[in-house]
Length: 192
Image 1 (cartoon, helix red, strand yellow):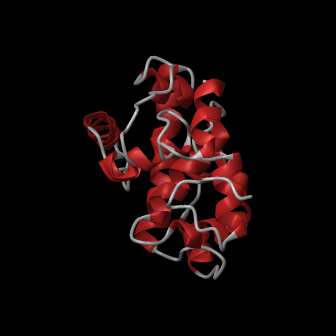
Image 2: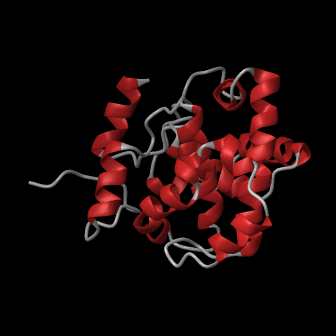
């Protein structure tokens, strides 16, 4: 008997099922993983999440395991190398954004002690548990994601619009947006 999962989870894709069942919505407090998810969410803009999941290991390799200090120091030679890497999204604007955002990420870490302290401070370090009546009620962005987006843009980040930030919030467990009938919703609630 199969479990009820979020409707966005493509049951024909092992990558989607694995990501949904083990990672999506689980609270993340590790800065390296937070940077990785910020990068992947930005890279996904205009594309399917499945295309990003299938390339995730390639991104890890291409971006030095998302070591933020290393990424923030990339120069034009590395950008050109990345633009030749068929295993990732080869978009100059997105690649330059990753590098720029890495520098801002480090600035935030200096100011707040960690990116974790910054991003989770927006929700008082507690995942939001909103009970939506139906999956159609789950928004693409919220007032909070708009505020975080504006703050990150003011600090100099790009590819951090309110929809991308809300997707990040969902992915890193700041908000539990598993569908109301998804088996993971209760598990994530109990985890929080």
